[in-house]
Length: 406
Ligand code: FAD
Image (cartoon, rainbow, N blue to C red):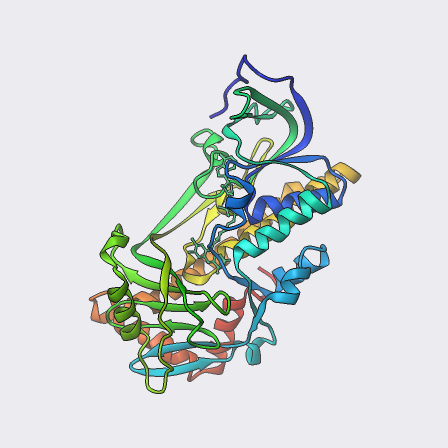
C-alpha cells in the first residue's frame, strides 16, 4: 500500500535511488551505485553497530566472491575467509567425505555475514562517502507507480518526517521489511512453501570440531556443524516447528549434537557456551515479478530461502549486482535492458536454488520424518552421492551454485 507524504515533513529531497535496508543486498546495491557515481541514499532502521554484529550467514559461493573482488568489495574477505574444498556427511554411524572441489574446481568461502556487512558499510560510507541513515523509523513508500515515487521516514531525534523523492526504490529490507508490503494485493504472485519442520540455530563459543562443514543425517533429526571462526562454530539441530529455545538447555543441546553427529572415527565435539539459540521455522517464498512500478525488490525482500542450503546471502548479492548495474546503465546511457530483464534474471537463479533446497531437505529430514518410505529415499539419495560420479558432480554444481547458466 502507498500513502501520501505526511503533512509535518522536512523539506523534500530529490535522490536518484533510495535503498531501503542495509543488509548484504542493500549495501551491495549502494556500493555499485556509488562506484558508478549514481546518487543514492540508504535507509536502515537499526544502528550501524547492530547491523555490523548481527550473526547469520557464513558460506559464500565462489562466483559471489569473484564479483565482490572485481568491484573492490572483497579485499578483506580474500585475506581472511577460510577456503573450503570438502564437506562431510554422517549417516548410519559412518563418515563420508564429499570433495566438491575435485568435482568442480570451485570452493566455498567461509566469511561471517557481520564481517561482510562491516566491509560493505565501511566501503560505502567511509571510503566512497555514501549517504546512509541509521536508526530511521516508520519507513513508508509512496506513489510507486508514478514518476514521483518517494520514500519517507521519521527521524526519531527531531520527530520530523523526511520525504525523499526518487527515480527508483531498491527494496532490500529483508523478510520482515515494508517494501514488499507496499505492493498492492494482486499485483505480484507470492509462492510459499513450508517444510513443516524447524532448526534450532546455535552459535557456540567453541572452536570447530572438523576442518569442514558436517551434515548429520540421523533418525532423531538433522544436525549441522559449520565453522565460523577459530573461536566460534555454528550448529543446527532439527526440532519441531514453533519449538521454544528454552526447551534446549546447554546439556540437552550438546548431548543431542554428540548423538546426531556421532560416527566411527569422528573427532569429539569441542563444547562451549551457547551465545545464540533460536528456532527457525523452515519456509520459503518467492515474489514474482520482483518489480512493481519504481520499486525493485532484492534479496530476502523478494525471496526467502530457508537456510537449509546456505543460499540466501548469495542470492541477495546476485540480485544486488544485477540491480546496481541495471540502474547505473539507465542513468549513464539511458539503457533500460538491465532493468527490463532484472526480475527474470534474478528469478532463474532463485528458483534453481529453491529446488536444491527442497532436494536437500529430502535428504536431511527424511530419516527423522517417521515415514519409512521417506527415510528409505533419503538414504538412497545420500548413497548415490558416493556411488555415482555423475550424481556427485550434479550435486556439487548445485551446492556451489557453479552452473554456467541458470
Ligand atoms: P537482511 O540481511 O535481512 O537485511 C535487511 C536489512 O533491512 C536489515 O538490516 C534490516 O534491519 C533492515 N530493515 C528491515 N526493515 C526495514 C525498514 N522498514 N526500513 C529500513 N530498513 C529495514 N545465506 C547464505 O547465503 N549462506 C549462509 O551460510 C546462510 N546462513 C544463514 C544462517 C542463518 C541462521 C540465517 C537466519 C540465515 C542464513 N542465510 C545464509 C541467509 C542470509 O542471512 C540472508 O539471506 C541475508 O541476510 C539476506 O540479505 P538481505 O540484505 O536481503 O536482508
